[in-house]
Length: 161
Image 1 (tube, rainbow, N blue to C red):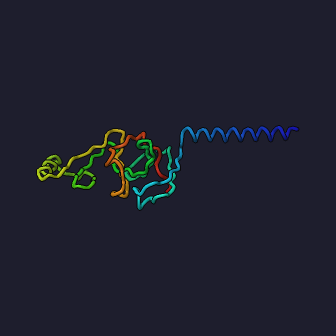
Image 2: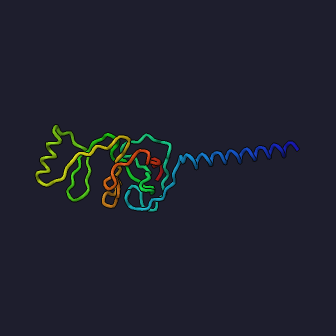
Image 3: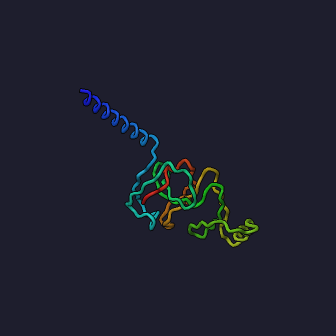
């Protein structure tokens, strides 16, 4: 009689523990499993690949591949620039972003380029935001289109692809 009672208590305890762990995963979302839809991260991550993202790791650095919520969709991009970083932008008819070279008088250089019709400017990533780029520059819709993204929109850092 006692053994059946103990088995029932153990069974109920395991069920409660499983329910608690399940609720924690649903509420806190420590991991995301995402299917890649487009070719914006090609050749690093191919279309129809399944990726796993860690939602608990919030220490981001340049080069990290992350899952981001943008306009209600989950997208996968690489962090190109962190908050407060500056980079030099040239508009030559195609999208191009490069880190700002160390030049004594950057504004003089920008004004010089503007004389010849070249659109040039320095972009500084706002506080608590990141600038994202896809690895496939020609097919990626990223921060060059929608601007920098708040850190709170990052759902997780890719740990497996």
